Length: 284
Image 1 (tube, rainbow, N blue to C red):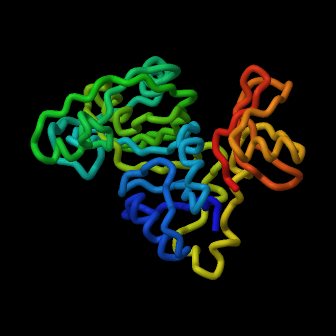
Image 2: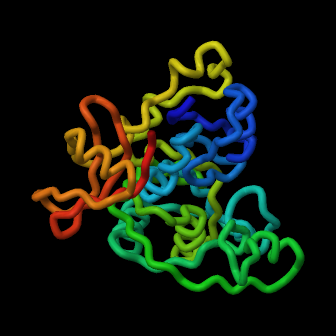
């Protein structure tokens, strides 16, 4: 059993909980997710099964789209509603739509630098940042550059705002919420997060985990080649043998990553460089 399921993760489950559930339902040990969602967050969480686990890096590297709710007036140590309150704004909060829209445009568009939360899965000297933070150690996470392709202020209500963000891999939406709070002077935290898209996986096609059963799991699984956004290349019999054995194959086409086929059989992925095709992932 090899394939990918576009799971709609509910709030309250960890990404590992989803993996464990799919392992139990499928009877396959080799199962992996493609980018952690916090336990309180919901949304698209592609799950790879069997040989499809070799594709995790491809899928994780894709751009993401989120819808988040920001609550103003308080800062927490986790930058979300589950953390310990650090500071609280006591006076009346007055959010201006135009001003907040300008803050997003001026500070959170294009290539930006951000510091991920101390309570995150980032490794520091081989240890997870959240483990260090929980043990009371000081956590110094270096700034990282991420890209915000687009953001949209959807609405403001009372002391909350809803924002849609299309961004690169590695972007921490919690950090954006925290930074927006600093700029406004009110302080803020992320009160809800929904991932609506990652690569080709869209929430419109996501499947609720309760709807995945032993009986239908094969029917809800996507094929490995269908989720890859690479051009296709077909090999003849001689080229196929060379490719499968890990030898270079002469191909006078453009450099780049390709989905590789023999007739209608998907062999895996390969990279062409200087007119030579080299195996990247063999998926037979």
